[in-house]
Image 1 (cartoon, rainbow, N blue to C red):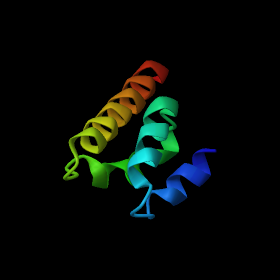
Image 2 (cartoon, rainbow, N blue to C red; image 1 turned 30 degrees about the vertical axis):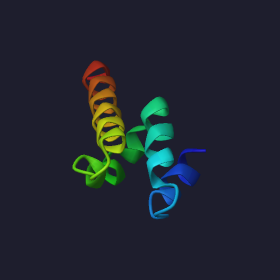
Image 3 (cartoon, helix red, strand yellow; image 1 turned 120 degrees about the vertical axis):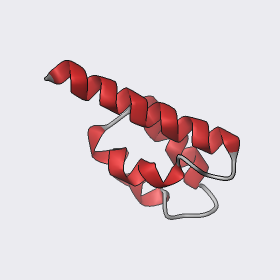
Image 4 (tube, one colour; image 1 turned 180 degrees about the horizontal axis):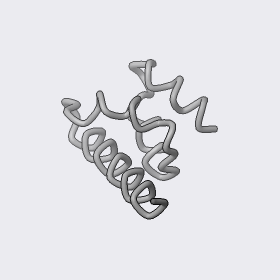
Length: 64
């Protein structure tokens, strides 16, 4: 599912929903792909991307 969601980030019709899905899963391998959405013009996409990245970073900090 993660790989598919990352691929969908390139689809202008559904990328916001892919960001939301990745925000729920918070997979570390999606972090770099999500960075381009932290300043998205749509607020809900921007918020989801920022939350996803924050969650990924928290998980990484706990692992070290």
